[in-house]
Length: 153
Image (cartoon, rainbow, N blue to C red; front, side, top):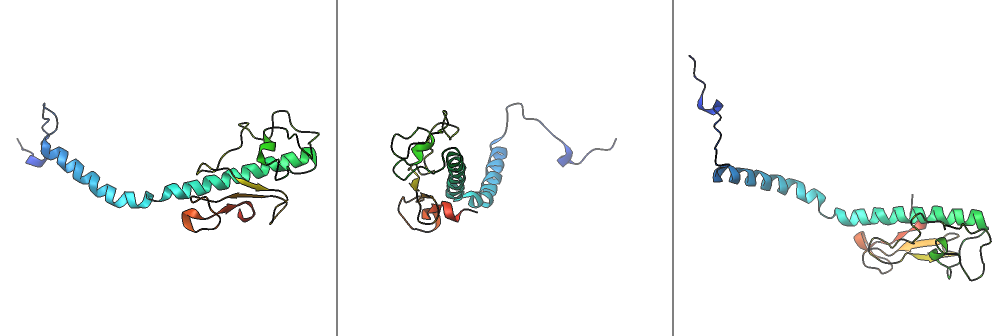
């Protein structure tokens, strides 16, 4: 009878894995982590910037619906809150939708936990919506870069 080489023999250890087997797995995981982890580092801020752009686009859609119903955009003083609560200051919208214009009945905050800045009339358009990024201050680069409605694609 022909015998198989030793490396084809599989012996199960009834007590579980040996220390050596566990160390091999830990080393392999460590090697994988050194190659994969750097690719995902810093992606959190990229995701926050994308979220802010999506929020601004959604707010723009809601503002357009508000304008279609009422003939004008909310003023700077009325703010984005006019999308969830009928304004009590002039100009008062006559055809304001009873459930508001935002799906969750609340104005979202930017991904860094701050209010979006809303100007109407805007400096760049009929209205401007701005998130000042991670630092919360105008200007900045990279993660501190402002996200502005007039720059969205």
